[in-house]
Image: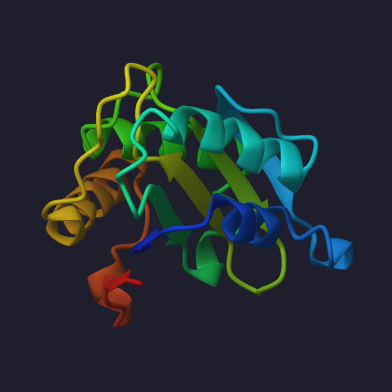
Length: 166
């Protein structure tokens, strides 16, 4: 499993991308969410922005994680499994899934199974979710999830973790 982490500014752009409203043939499917409406990108972004307003000085409040699996895992990584993995990923990253807004969306636009996890870096108490050492934490969490779910280890298929803070 590969985890690609980005920290961004705009919930609007991110929500449009993950829900793929402009390209519905790509097969975006909301698997799970907490504290947000998922019926449209506009509602999703508005809900994220409402909580983000508790920390107006936080420039980059969007944590976006793309979690990708080898094509060989396609049958194993069902929507239900992806939802559980997303929840476990949040907990592993020390993000309280019950006190933080997030949404997980599966995309069908590639041959390999993958999902996008969008997380508000402002929790429901108005505290900032740390992005310090997010790359190393993500690598460790992904390795743990691979073991827990019996997934193909990313290092064994020549894949690398990536971090882009944009």
